[in-house]
Image (cartoon, rainbow, N blue to C red; front, side, top):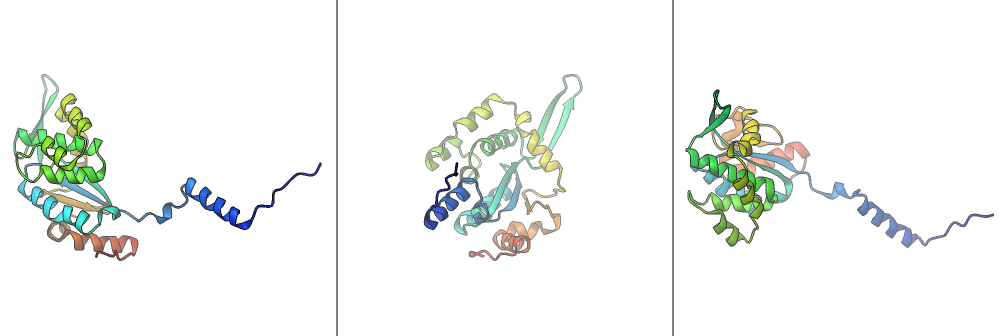
Length: 216
């Protein structure tokens, strides 16, 4: 018996191929390369607040660099710790007091439960003042923070912050905020990053991917 092999029009085959490529994710090379940006900060640190509001947010949103970024918020900073040998309970001592530890944990829960754009908007809003309320920011930005608030309410602050403490301890941080670019933390380039973030980002992006971004 002869097998039947359909003779499809060339236009159909091309269309089928394009659909197949899209379904199998072979169009991923059309996605922009992303430069990792790791922001180590404290929630009550004036320098952290200024950098995120005036440098980071403007670069990510006004200069449209967010689409080219793998943005990672690390709310921890300079924290001391002591473990009580009688109870094995670890106490954290944040640079600006206990309130900062609690706010760091709240920011960590936002990082865990909200999208990166939501994180950027919420964290920037919260850093507009020392007593800015998450519900006020949530309502203003129309962002659901139910899961983030539940995370903060049902978990111990120490447990929430452990991951971010480990990430911070892994770098040679002497100043808060500090920023890693492209997966590398360079303590000698922090001044240029903190005071001219867009230009430094663009230069690092060009070095890593050999691409000149339009808004650079």
